[in-house]
Image (cartoon, rainbow, N blue to C red):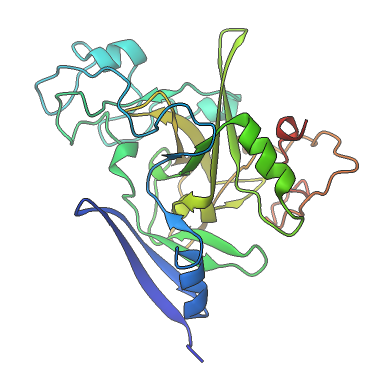
Amino acid sequence: MWGKIHTTLIFLQDGILCEYFYFTGAFLLQLLYFYGVFFIQYSTDNVAGPGCSVNPSEVTLPGCSCLSCFCRADSCSCLQTFGQAYESIGRLLNIDRPESGYSTPVFECNALCTCSDTCSNRVVQRGLQHRLEVFHTKSKGWGVRTMEEISRGMFVCEYAGEVISFAEAKRRQFGKRTEENNYIIAIREHAGTSSITETFVDPAQVGNVGRFLNHSCTPNLYMLPVRVHSVIPRLALFAGRDIHAQEELTFDYSGGYSTQPAAEAPSTVGLQRKQCHCGAMNCTRFLPLDLSILS
């Protein structure tokens, strides 16, 4: 009845263009259903959810006093304290870290810094820089693909949603019906041998384009915690390799990234597992499941 649509979605925040991508689908009602008319609140940033003790939008990190447009490692307090994460064009410097099984959190310049908005240490906070398209896949529901080539190490998009507590994540997980999708991502950062910082983000009710990204056992994106204004990290997704135009964007829901065969998943006998339809040669057949939330 409606025919096929191809709609450009532009999201403004305080009059500033902050999200720009395409949406394709078979029916206009599907478009309205998935973009807030019924239950989805679109947000380009994390928001405080139940159990979150810190407002994700509150500026809690110190800023540098650089007066030049671009911060330099020999004079910028941000770079001296946290290290330089990006090249001048915004590409990650330590791009091979995910292959080794670990990564270092990134700290960007923030609202308290006196450097310009074009500083090379401001990447994730600029939002989408590539044209993305939300589309309906053959076997995985909605997905996201790029309309243009993306070079390895470049920022693609954020996985934004409600920041919730462990208790709330557990409550929501147990409250899910079998046919419902689980969007909760748990990030665990290790500082030394005993200190672990956990962040739980759920874009089921409030989220951005990242909520439509599918899992793959051989992904082309990887997730990295990036702190901008707040101690609460943003879950940023970077290109793990060169990505071609029209290629679907995927990441490993378990948080890993490797070009090697996937490790055998731990036993989940008795648990309802969702099948994985990524089609990769090393597919583990089931979507990752965070057992710690269910314990």
